[in-house]
Length: 153
Image 1 (cartoon, rainbow, N blue to C red):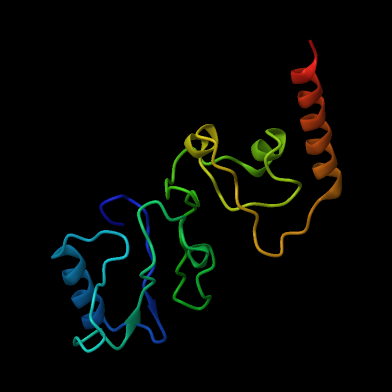
Image 2 (tube, one colour):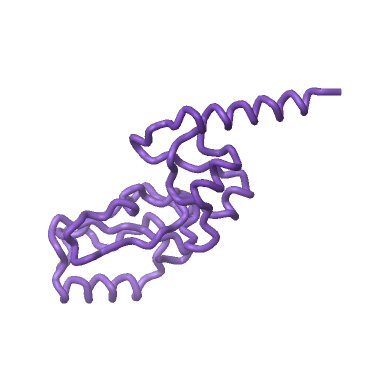
């Protein structure tokens, strides 16, 4: 977590040692970290050649998709559910809530919180999510009905 509260990812091809984790924690705690800030220069020891991070991020950038798919076999490492739009872990909408609100186009989506839905931010479909045509049809019919009602004198 950082100043804006959005979880950000750090990538490594190898598992970090206890010393590496301590050095990373000290670096994060010792700096004013903002999304996109470089944690370590490439030549900086001990972690500059071990870790990588995405730099084209801002506090307004959605949570990285890799957050939801940590590699398996990492000693039971599991990321807690978080809103893809703001990183919040509270007031997450269920898939059935999103379907009922006609926001999914019949697809399964990443978690999104109530605050983001109310703010008009749309859910993001999971990659490769199969469209449930019956749900999409229900959502489209409801949208058409609302549009007709809005146009009626």
